[in-house]
Image 1 (cartoon, rainbow over the protein chains, first blue to last red):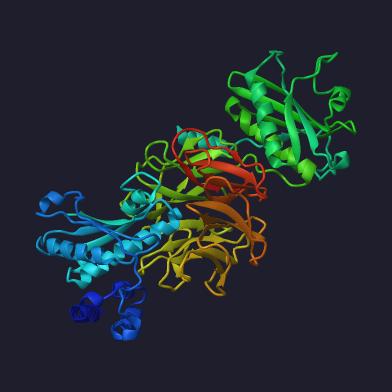
Image 2 (spheres, one colour):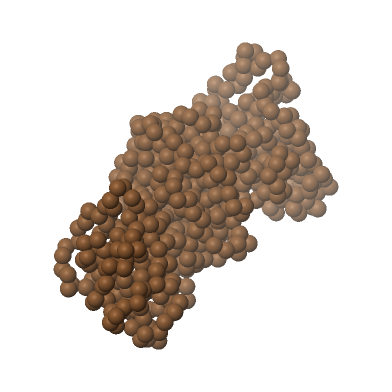
Length: 192
Length: 430
């Protein structure tokens, strides 16, 4: 099974190299290790082929709402690193990775890769809208979307962990879009 | 100390019924002429030592009046006693002035306080037919004063409607008063607040066990959203499910044998049931979507839950083994927080409207979908065990607080007191 997973990652990595910028959020979303092992295997066979279909990859960017990346906000304990791990941001009720979020994850990946002693905890968060319960699950999807992307880029999964705080730990107080947009985020926290 | 308080509260001595009138308790048809609402006078109880203006007396009258007014069955008001020719004892009731003042029902009471000991006797009279309807005598401590008053309000409702009230029940909720999100318990009317958890972490989604002795909740105290239970008589927070990922929105089955919850151990949040000790998980949903908030039907045969499998969160129902899944809510783009009514006929939930929520109820066949609230943002409905009331949290007053309303949406009243946000109410059993 483990071999299959590695194989899948390699395959997806190569594939992304080829497809480049066209790779949409679908990649990250679909190859999440969802539940039974048998299913993951099945997806490994089906998904890559599916993604190549032009019909499923229209010329315009995938219908993901754009979001921004704020790399100026350092994570806790980031002083161990030359560059801070950037937070990434999401749209309302979405765990899709925007192009900006992908760029930030690419930079985070390089930082993590060059500091071999670290485990990074990815903390998924939501804005205050929506129910607390649903947001706990949504926050976890956000954290796992980032984890899966980092794994796809080559970070070993064992160096990453996820936790969702739902809407329980807002970064910014306030009830308008400027606050909400800063709260719909993944934070990357160095564990050791 | 807290443990002692609760042990005493829950092992409270049983009320001693007066056997002078040994009629079996049965519903007495009491109706006011012309569809007018019944009027209940609560004579401020008399202290047997003759002390006037005892604050305890006023408090008892206020408690019974609050309960009966909230019930919607009658309009109640505490009243000073009419000057009585004799001793004013309970044995001789002069109905005439109460009838002249327009009352249909009358509560009279007598109490004595000796040191820390409290003895109370309440009687309910039918003013029109000039007869006593019920009487109860309570022996306990002075701190039980409100409890005894609530217990007699239960009795009044039983005699008048045939169904006992839920006025001695409790509401657990999440409070940020301490600076962290902790589980707090209060009487249903908002009094006797008691902070249950003190772990300084994030504590969420309390749910009472069917016997009312334990609370299930999710806590981040070990840096993961794990499910714990805690007996009200104890300070021990016992881990129930500490599986990898989410262990959230746990609810007890009606017979207390199993727990439904959302786990993400297999990749994303799915609905499972567990034995009450957290063992033998059974997975009920298999889906790439978010599934949370499972709640049981009162007969334990069905489970309602939230799923965004169709794009946005909606309420679904399924058999308790995961079969026969049906979508319940079809209107509204974002419906969450299902809670099955104790009678089984309705499900209360919260629908997103604008930037907030409102409480709705819907019949279990999907008909009769209708709003109960329209002010501020209101979410997390929780039924009282008799189905007469729904508690919810609302931001209408500024800071989020716990409210109670009748199940038709009338009588919306804030009950939680104190500072901080109060959210996610759960109602105890009777």
